[in-house]
Image 1 (cartoon, rainbow, N blue to C red):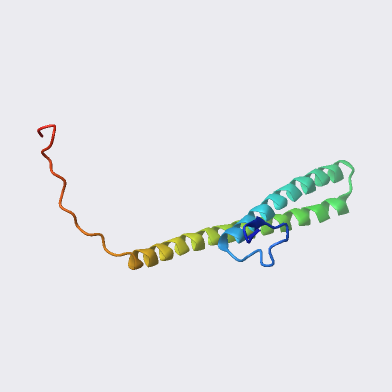
Image 2: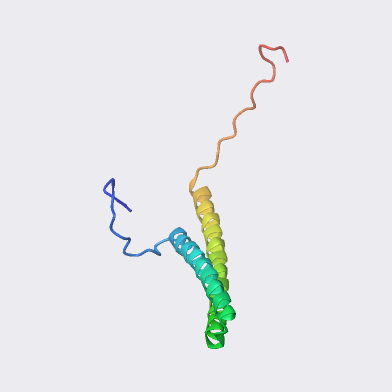
Amino acid sequence: MVQNGAMSDAPNPNPFDSIESAQEFLGLLSEAIKEATRDVVADREAGLSQAQQRRVDALNLALYKLKLLDEHVDKSLKILKDLHSIRRILVGERTEAEEPEPIDEAPPETSGRFGV
């Protein structure tokens, strides 16, 4: 975070103050979910090889919940992307409304030094 022209190591008091920061957070969460899923799959395989059925059942439930969470995060990222696009459209409309109309200039001469 930049304050008064200097970088600050202090965490942002509101990490969701913009669509972009929320997208960044959800992107990191998505990566963490994928990593956790890989770990749980590996643990599940180990539990299967050691015939630990109760552990395997618990890990299957964890995989199901991780899948649900991943789907929700993915949907949230898509919604944030849509909101970002809508904001760009609205800001563009506001900018266009604030800008003065361009003045029509006379077309440049077609005859010139090349004799065209």
